[in-house]
Image: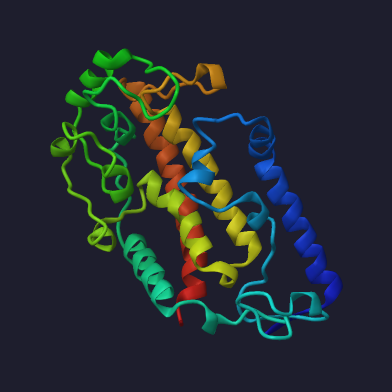
Amino acid sequence: MLHLDAPTWRARARAHAERADALTAAHRARRERHEAHPVEDFLFTYYPTRPNRLRVWHPGAAVVLEDAAERAGWRHYSPDGSRVDPATIRPATIAFVRGLLEATASRPAHLGCFGLHEWAMVYRTRGTRHPVPLRLGAEGTDAVVENHRLSCTHHDAYRFFTAEAAPRNAERPTREGQVALEQPGCLHATMDLYKWATKLGPLVPGELLLDTFALARDVRVLDMRASPYDLDAHGYAPVRIETAAGKAEYARAQQGFAARGAALRTRLLEIVADR
């Protein structure tokens, strides 16, 4: 057990809250103005963790906090508030997260999808999932889908494909098959490291939780820059994946995110390895 004296752990908790506030400042300001954002809101809708929860620091497992009476009665903590109690986290949750992360880490990263999942979500429909225009228009967007091979491996992206786009995908991702199919090059699998960190709750040190959030935020920007949407008004230049240069730009960024994700996946696996 690592013991942290009160000045040390309280300083870490303050630094964590300040970092969380900085990461969520723009979102909180827009929320006060009742303004939506087509890129960043995803992190607070698809991932339903609120900013106030993000700013609460936890030490993780195998750490004892000295003089922590104010945490007595906290969920997932020992009665005196001095440490996180791993026995209070559902074993089924830990087992699922461990199995999924181990399986994902065991596979090579596939870098040839070019973010076409967002295009497949609006294929042959005149509606959009976000209140912004399509960069190439409806017909141009359809043409991009028809001129490419769809190879999405992530169920939570594939399930939003239009009925016309779904049969074009090389895979048929399902919730039941997630562990068998998930791979580390997938942008959504990388973003989901944040989801699995939140599922593990206080077992995950606050610093690691915010690292996964920061990575998810960065990945989301690429996800939408490579999408069919025109986001110039929001300050995002497109990654034109319909061109050779755009494909190369996307693959380079995807590879970088896969590497960052691999490091965080390893840290999460260290937490659940023996549980």
